[in-house]
Image 1 (cartoon, rainbow, N blue to C red):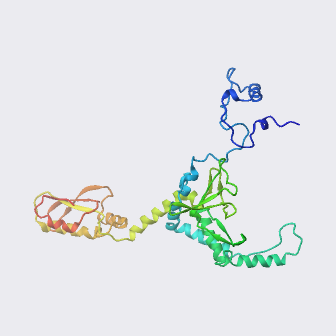
Image 2 (cartoon, rainbow, N blue to C red):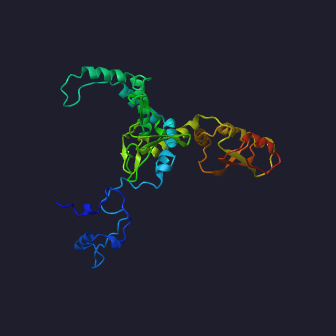
Image 3 (cartoon, rainbow, N blue to C red):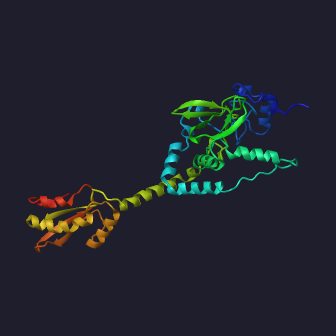
Amino acid sequence: MGLPLLDRFRKGGARGAELAPANTPAQIEGALTASGMDQGGNFRPGRPLNPYFGYSGQARAMDYPLTVNTATQGRAAWGRPSYDVLKAIIDAYDVARMCINHKIDELRSMPLMFQPADSVDDDVDEAIDVAKLVLAYPDRQLPYESWLSKWLENAFKYDSAPLYRRRNYDGDIIGLEVMDGKTLYPYIDENGRRPVTPAPAYGQIIHGMIGQWFTTEDVIYVPFRPQEDTPFGMAPIESMLLTANTDIRFQWHFLQLFTDGSVPAGFIGAEFVVDHGASQVRAPAYQHVPLYDGSRGRDRQRSSARDCSYSRSRERTISSESVHHSRMQLRIGSGQGADLRTVHQQRHSGATRH
């Protein structure tokens, strides 16, 4: 029995030479004509463009960026939020930190359970004792609960939780060490898949350069939420960056209400209808100084607006009686860098503006 039609044009899955339209096999051209996919006729869909790599070869898993294996920027090389951005958001956002702590504590509180695998009827008590002994210190340094917490930090922060298979001189695995997920950079082959041993599948970025190559036999790397267009997983915080950033900015804005500063929240200027003395300027000015003194907090602006019964517009002119019952105009507004205590120093100016 002969091979299927397209199997005759496959080249072992490898990329073939570029094919010009004239090189399209006659059988395929005939199939295109029979399907109405040739260049003739009216109101037809048209003939597909000739493939660059050939016919029925291996499909690419993703449309990856060119020369992406030469990059050392980690996630940023794939157009994803960088590890620095994710770390800064998580470190500053208390809600994210509380969620991570809660899930880690929840998983750490679950006791380990050992039981035979499916379809295993033999006595496995001895194997279970060995498994308990090995998992007591998975990396031969940290106890299981601490080791699990360290590994989950990578998983919940970045969805990058690689484990390095530590071996002895005989090549036997003697421990699973938690690697910093930010330092591991996955490579891809020509078809966008993970390279097969002995080709390097991962590089470790140390101080901006590739420090080591690792194969799939050296490192275990399994994203919790793998993506179709990148070898990196979807970090939990990555799907809510805008919300987290908004909350952080709101908390920072709210913190300013309780932070004293040296820049007042407004300024007051006096414009005389008639020329008066400096004492008539000091009196109404000092009445408003406590409302703006030493703080840029919005709460003081609001309270001063209620106490003085002026609107929240940028600037307006109001009338006020001075302590000597003389008529003057006060110009009240908001600004930065104004110091109302210097009003009395402007004794000979017809208009004092700060």
